Length: 266
Length: 344
Image (cartoon, rainbow over all chains, first blue to last red):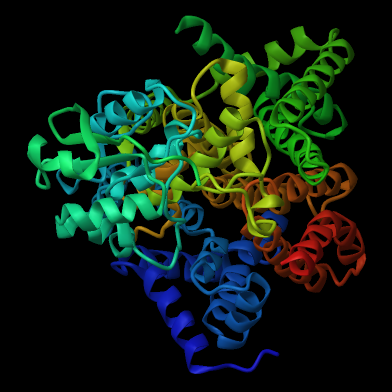
């Protein structure tokens, strides 16, 4: 049941790689483990507990996570491998490093030494880590709504929500696959998310990117999608749409919304 | 808007604190610690939701029924707590205001500044995560269709029971809070929870700090400032817990990593293994069961954490009592785990 295959070892390695990241924080964490094991006193009850939790516990969890047999055990229970890396959350990384740094500052006797050590530690943290809120990396993005959805995407979804009719199934590119049902649970989508696949590999996304209106309309008809959203890079003149029984009903700066005249619920 | 803010503060801060005050009456040293009461109250909110949501799902009750049942239960528990603590509020306030006055001013201001900055970023900025097409969508679907695990993420009825999520229905907690405070589930998830659960997580870390440094406030606040710095610069890997709290605090698994697992550390560090620790084993039981709401990983990870710590404590004190006290604490998670495996 827990035989270790090559795949299990790969899962184990992948998890470790994800945990380590750039490596410097993990270096600080390993330092903190050594620190508590070396400097916490045996005859002080609290310090002994600190040694156990931030020293021995951390070491045991680290070793377990690196052990393919443990990997196999966990992935067998979970019946998937894609989330194994979360076992590294068992390690008290932040607490351990912060404790070590606090003790280092506290052990200085003079105020000036404490202040200097504090500044040095802040520099170490800045150099070792990566700033969370790099706005140019487009991970933390400013939008104009509290839903925290791209404004132009929200605009289209809200238009569809207010449109007449009970049956609504939307075909669109990645943002719409992600955000539509977060905003309106009554608007359906054509494909279910497979967590092992990227959205860009979904057939609707590749068909839209292909830019062939006949293929797009065939897809929508076979999946009973009565709404279609296309980005401004994939546009069709109104007269071209006439032959496909579809009309543009709304557009904003980034997207155009189309509705099929005669698609009904399947 | 004002009404929404008041309701958010009421349901995510005041009510948990009041509810928790009842539980911590039995805590030997912490029976007036408002921060401990707050965390215990949040755990009780999660626990009551977990206890209700699973049978309601299997019995095919509506989302409205679940929401009303939970709201009523929490209201009853809060009223009971207020009645039982009515003579103690003055003393509790006096003790906690006294603690605030003893806080080191500069370090506290620095920490609060960092906390407000992190809260501002979570409140104001969008962090794109495709997992929300599942988690946040489930909350919206529950609200819009008034069902529990009937419709999948694209709008079809489930062909088979989604066992991975049924035992951890945190999206429905999101939907419930949304309905109570009067916001859309996506707003609750992406705008309210990043601030609310940031406060919860740092409250747990503050408690850990007091345990590590024997209630030395200066060292504790220094610890909090350094920890905040580690979080703000913690994007060394997008899989790190730091990113989870500052970027995705509305997801159950983020709360597992940043609230539950650290809180368990706190219990072992400060209370478990000491004299008269019976109440804290009950608290561990509550924590482990409440954690199951958050994520399918919550059924397993806290148990692994506790098992290793209990074994180490057993070796340390050469006393098998820890194992005997721990086994009942894991029973709900073990039951869910077995059901998870059988149904899957």
